Structure formats: structure tokens, C-alpha cells
Length: 75
Image (tube, rainbow, N blue to C red; front, side):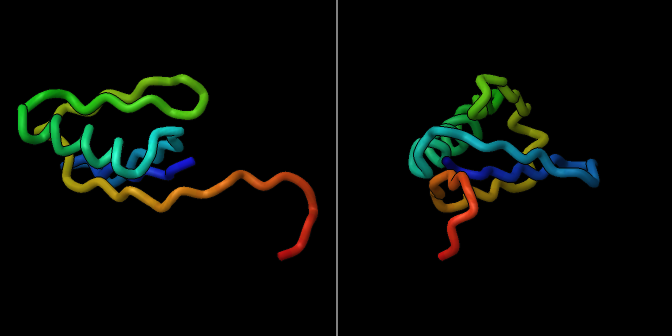
């Protein structure tokens, strides 16, 4: 699971998305949207789709992949 933060221009809040895509796939999608002047479309782990117009993206932070942990095990 990858955590993605997207900054929106002229907005004080950020979008937070958890995706099942790989870090490389997300970066490729962002670059393609910016290069082609298209809307960025990402789907989260619950199947919800987020659309961001390319001209409104101020930054994209793509975190490293993490495994979900369940339970009370200590590391």
C-alpha cells in the first residue's frame, strides 16, 4: 500500500490517498497527466476514484510501500 499526498493550488488542505498501485505506477500516472495536460486520476484502496485537474496540482508526495499490520505484535 502506498500513501499519496497531493497539494492543490489555492487550497490550504491536501488530498491523502492510499493506493494499491506501486510507487512507480503512481509516479508514471502523475507525470503522464502533467505532460499531456490531462486530469490526474487515482483509485484508492477502497475503490474510490480521485480526479485532480493537472493545472491545480502544486505537489505530489508518493510514500514508500508499506504492509498493513493487524494485531498487537511488537517489533
